[in-house]
Image (cartoon, rainbow, N blue to C red; front, side, top):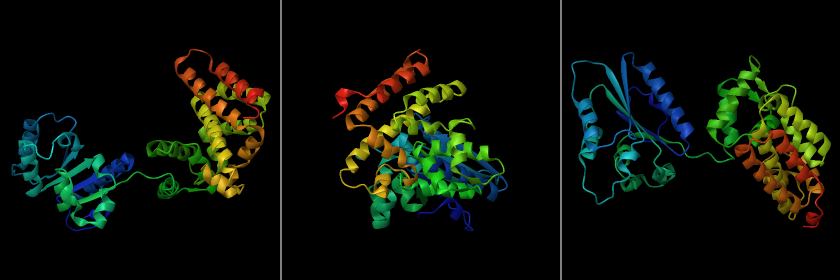
Length: 364
Protein backbone atom coordinates (compact mmCIF):
# COMPACT_ATOMS: atom_id res chain seq x y z
CA UNK A 1 0.00 0.00 0.00
CA UNK A 2 3.10 2.25 0.11
CA UNK A 3 3.40 4.33 -3.04
CA UNK A 4 4.80 7.71 -4.15
CA UNK A 5 2.74 10.42 -5.89
CA UNK A 6 4.63 9.82 -9.16
CA UNK A 7 3.89 6.09 -9.10
CA UNK A 8 0.20 6.75 -8.48
CA UNK A 9 -0.19 8.71 -11.68
CA UNK A 10 1.61 6.11 -13.76
CA UNK A 11 -1.38 3.85 -13.12
CA UNK A 12 -4.56 3.91 -15.17
CA UNK A 13 -6.85 4.06 -12.13
CA UNK A 14 -6.19 6.80 -9.60
CA UNK A 15 -6.94 5.53 -6.06
CA UNK A 16 -9.96 6.93 -4.28
CA UNK A 17 -7.93 7.84 -1.18
CA UNK A 18 -4.28 8.70 -0.50
CA UNK A 19 -2.47 9.67 2.74
CA UNK A 20 0.81 11.56 3.07
CA UNK A 21 2.37 11.71 6.54
CA UNK A 22 5.66 11.88 8.39
CA UNK A 23 7.92 13.73 10.78
CA UNK A 24 9.84 15.48 7.96
CA UNK A 25 7.22 18.16 7.34
CA UNK A 26 9.13 19.75 4.45
CA UNK A 27 9.01 16.50 2.48
CA UNK A 28 5.36 15.93 3.42
CA UNK A 29 4.40 19.30 1.97
CA UNK A 30 6.57 18.82 -1.11
CA UNK A 31 4.78 15.51 -1.81
CA UNK A 32 1.45 17.25 -1.21
CA UNK A 33 2.24 20.00 -3.75
CA UNK A 34 3.49 17.39 -6.21
CA UNK A 35 0.29 15.34 -5.81
CA UNK A 36 -1.87 18.42 -6.46
CA UNK A 37 0.13 19.30 -9.55
CA UNK A 38 -0.05 15.76 -10.94
CA UNK A 39 -3.76 15.59 -10.18
CA UNK A 40 -4.46 18.84 -12.02
CA UNK A 41 -2.46 17.66 -15.02
CA UNK A 42 -4.23 14.30 -15.06
CA UNK A 43 -7.77 15.71 -14.91
CA UNK A 44 -8.68 18.58 -17.20
CA UNK A 45 -11.75 19.59 -15.21
CA UNK A 46 -11.14 19.52 -11.47
CA UNK A 47 -12.38 21.17 -8.29
CA UNK A 48 -10.19 21.16 -5.17
CA UNK A 49 -11.45 21.79 -1.64
CA UNK A 50 -9.22 21.83 1.42
CA UNK A 51 -10.23 21.45 5.06
CA UNK A 52 -7.82 21.88 7.98
CA UNK A 53 -8.89 19.93 11.06
CA UNK A 54 -7.37 22.62 13.26
CA UNK A 55 -10.30 24.77 12.11
CA UNK A 56 -13.02 22.10 12.51
CA UNK A 57 -14.21 22.50 16.08
CA UNK A 58 -17.20 20.17 16.41
CA UNK A 59 -18.69 16.87 15.28
CA UNK A 60 -21.60 18.77 13.78
CA UNK A 61 -19.28 20.82 11.59
CA UNK A 62 -17.44 17.71 10.38
CA UNK A 63 -20.70 15.88 9.64
CA UNK A 64 -21.95 18.87 7.63
CA UNK A 65 -18.76 18.92 5.53
CA UNK A 66 -18.92 15.19 4.83
CA UNK A 67 -22.63 15.16 4.08
CA UNK A 68 -22.15 17.99 1.61
CA UNK A 69 -19.62 15.92 -0.36
CA UNK A 70 -21.45 12.62 -0.06
CA UNK A 71 -24.49 13.65 -2.07
CA UNK A 72 -24.38 12.68 -5.78
CA UNK A 73 -24.74 15.60 -8.22
CA UNK A 74 -25.70 15.91 -11.87
CA UNK A 75 -22.35 17.47 -12.65
CA UNK A 76 -19.40 15.33 -13.75
CA UNK A 77 -16.69 17.62 -12.35
CA UNK A 78 -13.88 15.67 -10.71
CA UNK A 79 -13.37 16.74 -7.11
CA UNK A 80 -10.36 16.37 -4.81
CA UNK A 81 -11.09 16.87 -1.12
CA UNK A 82 -7.99 17.45 1.00
CA UNK A 83 -8.08 16.99 4.77
CA UNK A 84 -5.07 18.38 6.66
CA UNK A 85 -3.98 17.47 10.20
CA UNK A 86 -6.85 15.08 10.83
CA UNK A 87 -5.09 13.96 14.04
CA UNK A 88 -6.04 17.29 15.64
CA UNK A 89 -9.66 16.14 15.70
CA UNK A 90 -9.32 12.47 16.66
CA UNK A 91 -6.21 12.15 18.86
CA UNK A 92 -8.02 13.30 22.02
CA UNK A 93 -10.42 10.39 21.77
CA UNK A 94 -9.78 7.44 24.10
CA UNK A 95 -10.15 3.84 22.94
CA UNK A 96 -13.19 3.31 25.16
CA UNK A 97 -14.88 6.59 24.23
CA UNK A 98 -18.22 6.37 22.53
CA UNK A 99 -18.29 6.67 18.75
CA UNK A 100 -19.10 10.26 17.80
CA UNK A 101 -21.18 11.31 14.74
CA UNK A 102 -18.05 12.76 13.09
CA UNK A 103 -16.30 9.40 13.21
CA UNK A 104 -19.35 7.61 11.84
CA UNK A 105 -19.65 10.09 8.96
CA UNK A 106 -15.94 9.96 8.10
CA UNK A 107 -15.88 6.16 8.23
CA UNK A 108 -18.84 6.11 5.85
CA UNK A 109 -16.99 8.45 3.48
CA UNK A 110 -13.84 6.29 3.61
CA UNK A 111 -15.56 2.95 3.10
CA UNK A 112 -17.99 4.01 0.36
CA UNK A 113 -16.10 5.49 -2.60
CA UNK A 114 -17.95 8.20 -4.50
CA UNK A 115 -18.02 8.75 -8.26
CA UNK A 116 -15.61 11.50 -9.43
CA UNK A 117 -14.55 12.29 -5.84
CA UNK A 118 -11.04 11.65 -4.46
CA UNK A 119 -9.70 12.08 -0.94
CA UNK A 120 -6.24 13.25 0.15
CA UNK A 121 -5.10 13.25 3.80
CA UNK A 122 -2.07 15.15 5.13
CA UNK A 123 -0.95 14.23 8.65
CA UNK A 124 1.84 14.83 11.16
CA UNK A 125 0.54 12.39 13.79
CA UNK A 126 3.47 11.57 16.10
CA UNK A 127 2.32 8.02 16.82
CA UNK A 128 2.84 7.22 13.13
CA UNK A 129 6.56 8.09 13.19
CA UNK A 130 8.48 5.11 11.84
CA UNK A 131 5.31 3.25 10.91
CA UNK A 132 6.69 2.14 7.53
CA UNK A 133 9.30 -0.07 9.23
CA UNK A 134 6.63 -1.63 11.46
CA UNK A 135 4.34 -2.22 8.50
CA UNK A 136 7.04 -3.94 6.44
CA UNK A 137 7.64 -6.34 9.32
CA UNK A 138 3.98 -6.88 10.13
CA UNK A 139 1.19 -6.01 7.70
CA UNK A 140 -1.34 -6.32 10.51
CA UNK A 141 0.23 -3.43 12.42
CA UNK A 142 -2.48 -1.13 11.02
CA UNK A 143 -4.98 -2.76 13.36
CA UNK A 144 -3.45 -1.07 16.40
CA UNK A 145 -3.68 2.43 14.93
CA UNK A 146 -6.21 5.01 16.07
CA UNK A 147 -9.04 5.99 13.77
CA UNK A 148 -8.98 7.09 10.96
CA UNK A 149 -5.43 5.80 10.33
CA UNK A 150 -6.53 2.25 11.02
CA UNK A 151 -8.69 2.57 7.91
CA UNK A 152 -6.53 4.89 5.80
CA UNK A 153 -3.36 2.82 6.08
CA UNK A 154 -4.98 -0.61 5.82
CA UNK A 155 -7.33 -0.02 2.87
CA UNK A 156 -5.70 2.73 0.81
CA UNK A 157 -2.37 3.93 -0.54
CA UNK A 158 -0.01 6.03 1.58
CA UNK A 159 3.57 7.25 1.95
CA UNK A 160 5.62 8.23 5.00
CA UNK A 161 8.47 10.76 5.16
CA UNK A 162 10.57 9.99 8.28
CA UNK A 163 12.96 12.56 9.69
CA UNK A 164 16.21 12.63 7.73
CA UNK A 165 19.32 11.99 9.79
CA UNK A 166 22.39 14.22 9.49
CA UNK A 167 24.02 11.45 7.42
CA UNK A 168 21.12 11.43 4.95
CA UNK A 169 20.95 15.17 4.30
CA UNK A 170 24.09 15.36 2.05
CA UNK A 171 22.60 12.85 -0.40
CA UNK A 172 19.28 14.72 -0.30
CA UNK A 173 21.00 18.04 -1.10
CA UNK A 174 22.87 16.50 -4.03
CA UNK A 175 19.64 14.95 -5.30
CA UNK A 176 17.78 18.27 -5.10
CA UNK A 177 20.58 20.05 -6.96
CA UNK A 178 20.70 17.34 -9.63
CA UNK A 179 16.97 17.78 -10.25
CA UNK A 180 17.66 21.45 -10.96
CA UNK A 181 20.62 20.64 -13.20
CA UNK A 182 23.37 21.67 -10.75
CA UNK A 183 26.54 19.91 -9.62
CA UNK A 184 28.54 20.66 -6.48
CA UNK A 185 32.11 20.02 -5.35
CA UNK A 186 32.51 17.76 -2.32
CA UNK A 187 34.32 20.51 -0.39
CA UNK A 188 31.54 22.94 -1.26
CA UNK A 189 28.87 20.49 -0.11
CA UNK A 190 30.68 19.87 3.19
CA UNK A 191 31.08 23.60 3.70
CA UNK A 192 27.40 24.24 2.93
CA UNK A 193 26.18 21.61 5.41
CA UNK A 194 28.53 22.69 8.19
CA UNK A 195 27.20 26.21 8.01
CA UNK A 196 23.50 25.49 7.49
CA UNK A 197 21.09 24.31 10.15
CA UNK A 198 19.99 20.68 9.52
CA UNK A 199 16.42 21.76 8.85
CA UNK A 200 15.17 21.02 5.31
CA UNK A 201 13.18 24.27 5.12
CA UNK A 202 16.33 26.27 5.90
CA UNK A 203 18.51 24.07 3.68
CA UNK A 204 16.05 24.61 0.83
CA UNK A 205 16.07 28.39 1.34
CA UNK A 206 19.87 28.49 1.29
CA UNK A 207 19.97 26.37 -1.87
CA UNK A 208 17.60 28.82 -3.55
CA UNK A 209 19.97 31.67 -2.66
CA UNK A 210 22.92 29.78 -4.11
CA UNK A 211 21.09 28.92 -7.35
CA UNK A 212 19.85 32.48 -7.77
CA UNK A 213 23.40 33.76 -7.30
CA UNK A 214 24.80 31.36 -9.91
CA UNK A 215 22.46 32.47 -12.68
CA UNK A 216 23.30 30.46 -15.81
CA UNK A 217 26.25 28.71 -14.17
CA UNK A 218 25.50 25.16 -13.10
CA UNK A 219 28.51 24.20 -10.98
CA UNK A 220 28.81 25.13 -7.29
CA UNK A 221 32.29 25.67 -5.88
CA UNK A 222 33.59 26.59 -2.45
CA UNK A 223 34.32 30.17 -3.57
CA UNK A 224 30.72 30.58 -4.72
CA UNK A 225 29.32 29.42 -1.38
CA UNK A 226 31.51 31.64 0.77
CA UNK A 227 30.34 34.62 -1.29
CA UNK A 228 26.65 33.72 -1.13
CA UNK A 229 26.47 32.78 2.54
CA UNK A 230 28.38 35.87 3.65
CA UNK A 231 26.16 38.16 1.59
CA UNK A 232 29.18 39.93 0.09
CA UNK A 233 31.31 38.91 -2.87
CA UNK A 234 34.43 40.46 -1.38
CA UNK A 235 34.17 38.98 2.11
CA UNK A 236 34.43 35.36 3.23
CA UNK A 237 32.78 35.48 6.65
CA UNK A 238 34.15 32.07 7.59
CA UNK A 239 37.73 33.37 7.69
CA UNK A 240 37.05 34.46 11.26
CA UNK A 241 37.72 30.89 12.45
CA UNK A 242 41.29 30.99 11.10
CA UNK A 243 41.99 34.22 12.99
CA UNK A 244 40.44 32.86 16.17
CA UNK A 245 42.43 29.62 15.86
CA UNK A 246 45.65 31.67 15.76
CA UNK A 247 44.44 33.98 18.56
CA UNK A 248 45.01 36.85 16.15
CA UNK A 249 43.07 39.47 18.08
CA UNK A 250 44.20 42.48 16.01
CA UNK A 251 43.09 41.10 12.65
CA UNK A 252 39.96 39.63 14.24
CA UNK A 253 38.92 43.13 15.34
CA UNK A 254 39.56 44.53 11.86
CA UNK A 255 37.67 41.67 10.24
CA UNK A 256 34.63 42.03 12.51
CA UNK A 257 34.57 45.78 11.88
CA UNK A 258 34.65 45.19 8.12
CA UNK A 259 31.94 42.49 8.18
CA UNK A 260 29.50 44.43 10.34
CA UNK A 261 30.07 47.64 8.39
CA UNK A 262 28.73 46.16 5.15
CA UNK A 263 26.09 43.66 6.30
CA UNK A 264 23.90 42.53 9.18
CA UNK A 265 25.56 39.18 9.82
CA UNK A 266 25.72 39.19 13.62
CA UNK A 267 23.84 35.94 14.22
CA UNK A 268 25.58 34.04 11.42
CA UNK A 269 28.94 35.29 12.64
CA UNK A 270 28.23 34.29 16.24
CA UNK A 271 26.95 30.90 15.11
CA UNK A 272 30.20 30.27 13.21
CA UNK A 273 32.27 31.15 16.29
CA UNK A 274 30.06 29.02 18.54
CA UNK A 275 30.33 25.97 16.23
CA UNK A 276 34.10 26.36 16.11
CA UNK A 277 34.51 26.22 19.89
CA UNK A 278 31.88 23.50 20.27
CA UNK A 279 33.82 21.34 17.82
CA UNK A 280 37.09 22.11 19.59
CA UNK A 281 35.58 20.81 22.83
CA UNK A 282 34.61 17.57 21.09
CA UNK A 283 38.10 17.21 19.63
CA UNK A 284 39.74 17.48 23.07
CA UNK A 285 38.03 14.20 23.93
CA UNK A 286 38.62 12.49 20.58
CA UNK A 287 42.33 13.41 20.69
CA UNK A 288 42.67 11.17 23.76
CA UNK A 289 41.83 8.20 21.51
CA UNK A 290 43.36 9.03 18.11
CA UNK A 291 45.05 11.70 15.99
CA UNK A 292 43.80 10.22 12.71
CA UNK A 293 42.60 13.20 10.67
CA UNK A 294 39.78 11.29 9.00
CA UNK A 295 38.44 10.14 12.37
CA UNK A 296 38.83 13.61 13.87
CA UNK A 297 37.00 15.25 10.97
CA UNK A 298 34.19 12.72 11.09
CA UNK A 299 33.74 13.22 14.84
CA UNK A 300 32.78 16.86 14.33
CA UNK A 301 31.01 16.38 11.00
CA UNK A 302 33.47 18.23 8.76
CA UNK A 303 35.58 17.36 5.76
CA UNK A 304 39.31 16.80 6.47
CA UNK A 305 39.67 19.79 4.13
CA UNK A 306 38.43 22.06 6.97
CA UNK A 307 40.31 20.42 9.81
CA UNK A 308 43.44 22.62 9.84
CA UNK A 309 41.86 25.49 11.79
CA UNK A 310 40.79 23.02 14.46
CA UNK A 311 44.25 21.49 14.72
CA UNK A 312 45.72 24.97 15.20
CA UNK A 313 43.04 25.75 17.78
CA UNK A 314 43.79 22.58 19.75
CA UNK A 315 47.39 23.79 20.13
CA UNK A 316 46.50 27.38 21.05
CA UNK A 317 43.55 26.85 23.42
CA UNK A 318 43.23 24.80 26.59
CA UNK A 319 40.05 22.90 27.32
CA UNK A 320 39.28 25.39 30.09
CA UNK A 321 39.60 28.30 27.67
CA UNK A 322 37.26 26.63 25.19
CA UNK A 323 34.64 26.00 27.86
CA UNK A 324 34.95 29.61 29.03
CA UNK A 325 34.62 30.83 25.42
CA UNK A 326 31.37 28.92 24.95
CA UNK A 327 29.94 30.55 28.08
CA UNK A 328 30.90 34.02 26.82
CA UNK A 329 29.38 33.33 23.39
CA UNK A 330 26.06 32.41 24.98
CA UNK A 331 26.15 35.65 26.97
CA UNK A 332 26.78 37.72 23.84
CA UNK A 333 24.01 35.89 21.98
CA UNK A 334 21.62 36.98 24.74
CA UNK A 335 22.92 40.55 24.60
CA UNK A 336 22.51 40.74 20.82
CA UNK A 337 18.86 39.79 21.18
CA UNK A 338 17.88 42.06 24.06
CA UNK A 339 20.47 44.84 24.33
CA UNK A 340 20.65 48.15 22.49
CA UNK A 341 24.44 48.09 22.67
CA UNK A 342 26.33 48.39 19.39
CA UNK A 343 26.93 44.93 17.91
CA UNK A 344 30.55 45.75 17.05
CA UNK A 345 31.20 46.64 20.69
CA UNK A 346 29.67 43.32 21.81
CA UNK A 347 31.84 41.33 19.38
CA UNK A 348 34.98 43.25 20.34
CA UNK A 349 34.23 42.48 24.00
CA UNK A 350 33.74 38.81 23.16
CA UNK A 351 36.96 38.52 21.16
CA UNK A 352 38.98 40.23 23.88
CA UNK A 353 37.70 37.75 26.46
CA UNK A 354 38.21 34.59 24.41
CA UNK A 355 41.48 35.50 22.67
CA UNK A 356 43.34 37.10 25.57
CA UNK A 357 45.32 34.56 27.62
CA UNK A 358 43.62 33.69 30.91
CA UNK A 359 46.20 32.48 33.42
CA UNK A 360 43.58 30.89 35.68
CA UNK A 361 42.45 28.63 32.83
CA UNK A 362 45.86 27.89 31.36
CA UNK A 363 46.31 24.50 32.98
CA UNK A 364 42.65 23.47 33.21
